[in-house]
Amino acid sequence: MYILMIARGYPSKEFPQWGCFEQDQAEALCNNGHKVVVLSIDSRFLWKLRKVGITHYSKNGVNYYNSFWFPGVLTRTISRKFNFFIKKCQVDKLYKKVEFLYGRPDVVYGQFFFNTDIGVYLQKKYNLPLVGIEHAGRFNSDRLDSITKWVATNAYANADEIITVSQTLRKRILYHFKRDSYVVHNLVNNIFFDSVRKVKKTNSFSFVSTGSLVYGKGFDLLIEAFSLINRINKDIHLVIIGDGVERQNLQKQIDNLKLSHNIHLVGKKTKGEIVQILSDSSVFILPSRSENFSVSILEGLAVGLPVIATLCGGVKECINEKNGLLVPVENVPALADAMKKMYDTLGEYDSQKIAQDCYNRFSPSVIADKLVDVFQKAVEKKKKMS
Image (cartoon, rainbow, N blue to C red; front, side):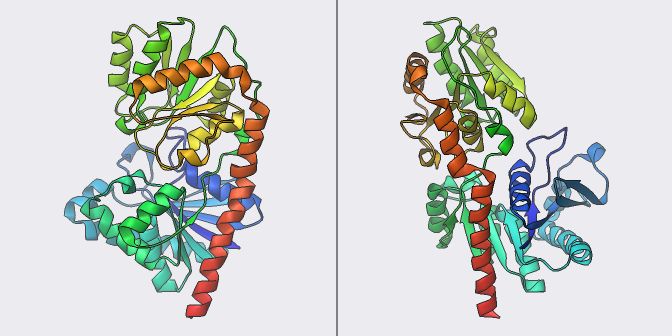
């Protein structure tokens, strides 16, 4: 099958997490024998880091084509309709180039509602099947902002099939748009399965967490909970991987609690660097206030780490009594109790079984096959309608 994916972009040295979901899926589909080309309209305001026009990048059998004309902050100032008109002009030019080079795709695959909306343009103009996948946490809210509702309504009213990454998100999309979807969970890159460690309690016990340093991820709660268990054992460490707008506030919180020797904000890291840090850690923690289906949890499980996570979104779809503990959202004492319990009982978790279970359910080949099943349904539906 020939899949034309519309993505946010692709990872770079400066932004290693940008478009990483899309790249992992593209490579998984490619490795399962499918042809994948990725288009992106990247309108971030990064003048010094981009060229105007179409750029091409190739990695692991996948070709990526990105278009940049104007920063989105400028086109959105004029009007939201003008902003999407510019994006659709760009994707049309990209599509014509890609069709000339690689032929007509079997299916268009939009990542996130805003790219699925762009895919609607290609669907209608070129009579192509369209599948959209949703990851965005904003749909967990009971009320949507006007732009999100406008764009997502058009996307999900027209897509031939929809995929959501958790049962919780499926219910939210159904609630907002009266449109059902297939659940296909996120995948975890194979690089994490290559580094399964034997987890055991040692004198260098450390918790680890990854994610954007934003309010919704709950790192302030994690730091507070860590301060409670630090009173019991001063040798325990916490490593937080990621960057974001809350970094300065989190560092101030760490300094005020006099925990700078125990809590380490290490910034953005590449996948290879994240694997190494996870492999040197004891337990993975995700303290989110809101979540759909966390890839970072899967990365911890793939390495063999037991996980502590807050009970939100689709987290309960991958955590059970054999691989971790679940705690209520925004409950610092419960989070601290779980951290202490994990420290005391770490030897009861089997890292090999944790990693194998993760591989059986969330490895790239498993998820790629599930995605293709939905693509084929969209293709058949389009044929019946033609």
